Image 1 (tube, rainbow, N blue to C red):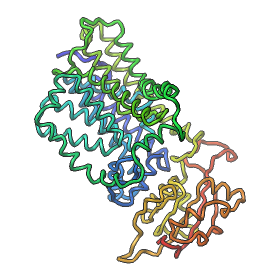
Image 2: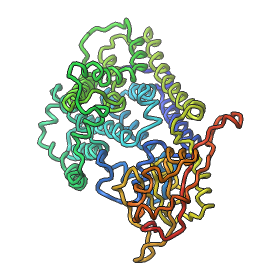
Image 3: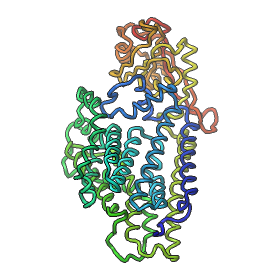
Length: 540
């Protein structure tokens, strides 16, 4: 048996599991223990988890919302459920990536662990994906699951394995619309390898279409009924609000940097470690040989990454865009450490000799240390940097203090919360799980009214002000000078002059988990609200 490229802590099952479980426990403890409020993307999922639907947001497929809705039905809306779901998805994605790379490398579990540790040691995956994202997190893990299913089909093309591939494709399609790009890029990559081409023309391939055909029609029918088209949405998120697109040659350099250079830079640390370990090693054959039984996986994965970048660049240019957020290429960037390790393994000549032990140890320890350092960066951000420098300060919102203020004003949690944004609205739903939450930023999403038997419940109405409105009120300005009543009235089912703006009040609440600062320097957020005990329109 060929000696693995990886030595050190990743070479043994105890070291691999110890590192993985230790990092998982640290991240979950930080996400729950160092936060009192929901993360940015979790706000929408908790808000939408007030009923089952074929779709919730025209910009995203519904699978993540379905998962959080199922958890909400079981245990109620909570910070623990949001954090637990996200990290369970990440853990499943890591397992899928590990087993996929293990199969691609001919059973090298240490190399597969190195690919996972390398991804965890990057700014894109180990830092940004650990702090943010919901639908993107699901897409990353789903893409890893698709690669795992492809590797299994390559090993043995049975009907059951094609059905499994179809199931992972259905999950990926319902995770995020951008999987269309990565799915097409994967097909392009498969066409470059003879065995993968044979699997594409296999007579059992139609079985892979069965799960998507069963899972997708309901949501697609809902999506066809929405006003916003995907083409218009792509143009809006890539043009920074410009009415007219910039000339092609003005857009290309910056966009190429966003699509090509930024993902590579975000995944650079493990690539540098791998390059250092491979430098000046003897290579009897410069062309990488098959890393698995027959497939040239290093080339396939590299083509997958390049095709993803090329397709993304072409789509954004075609829609008139000139910029792209860093996380859109995450599913492709995820495989860069695996591709590099497989490439080195395929061309390694003397790595199984005693003279190459230092290279193997450099890879094992270097990739493991990167993963630990990146987790330390996340801990530093959550515990030290965020309390001092946060903007919206979402994880530090004093939700319990705000709920206590609303209760003291007469809101018992059995009516309706009308929120300006989701910052307070979604968070207060965790404290008042029986309340219906409406939002002025999402006026089209209307969960059903609370009912007693066949009659709507006559409950209280808690109207939440935006931070701007609360700040203006704190400075002595009147809400009558704003569009406040006009935006609240349709959600409450009343005329604008029936909104009791004279009852509005604002209190300053100190952030939770703030660093030990003098009282004069402690940071606080304004909490502005109106409580109507009963009888306001459809607030029951």
